[in-house]
Every structure is written in C-alpha cells, then in structure tokens.
Image (cartoon, rainbow, N blue to C red; front, side, top):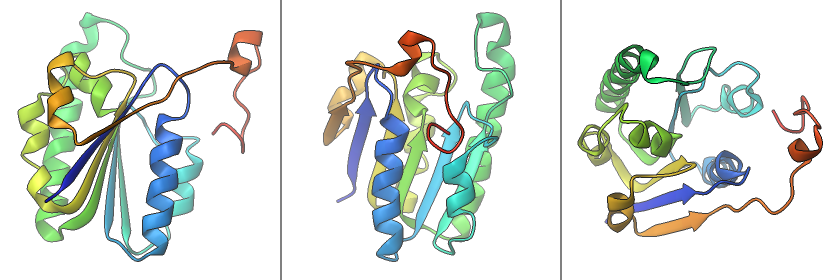
Length: 169
C-alpha cells in the first residue's frame, strides 16, 4: 500500500523537511520524482544538488511572480495542467517509488488543481507520496496516512532579515 503524507503549516521548513527525506531515500537508491508547483527552480539549491542524481527526476511548474490574485488564475491553471501532463508522460516512461509534490496544498487551496488530477498520477508511485503546502483543503485530511505540521515559533524574517543564499535558498 502506498503511504500518503501531508507536510503542512504556516512555518518555514515544509520543503526542507521533504527534501531531507528525499535525500535519505536517494542515498538508499530509491527512484524519486519531485514536482514543485508554483516554483521556478531559480535560486534552488536542492534542484542543483539533485540534478546529477540518476535516481531523482526534478520538475518545476511556476512563474517568476507568485500567484497573487484571481486575475492570474486561468494562467496558473494552464501552467499547472501542463505540469500534470508532463508528469504523466514522465511517470509512464518510468514509475517511481517516491513521488514528492511540493506546494500541492497551496495549488489545491487556490483551486489551481483538483485532488482528482493529482490522484491520477498516484498509481505511478509504489511506496510513498508526499505533498507539501501551507494549507490543504479541509476535506482532504482523511486522504493522508500521515500529517506533519510545521509551526513557526520564531523566524529571522520577522526581524527584517532577508533570505540568505546558501542557507535559506
């Protein structure tokens, strides 16, 4: 049975938590596909780290500006639908043991993708599916086997400290 994990919460570290897991599983030789929604892959240390790993395939489906308003919705829906098509093609070529869908929760919450669209690619993962996002639609919690919440207690951003290359990205 495939295990489904949601990594949620307002705190920083959801992607980092999932990437730590991916790092461990990559070293074990597991086949992995990572899809980042609403991210471009620019200034992406983890993208660069994993690009030379034969057992990790990495895709990003985002724009330079983050989704801000309903005026952009159709454009982002098209972008993410294209991303799902790319993932389906890639997964049909070679299934994976672990599928990571980074920021899927936000894409679901904004109505940019449906749960059914995501579920269509789940059969291509044999061991685990990890979905991250600040929030998920409330009704989806029953779909997860595990839910991990990342909570911000204190963060440098609140003091005006910008993200630092090599540390935060």
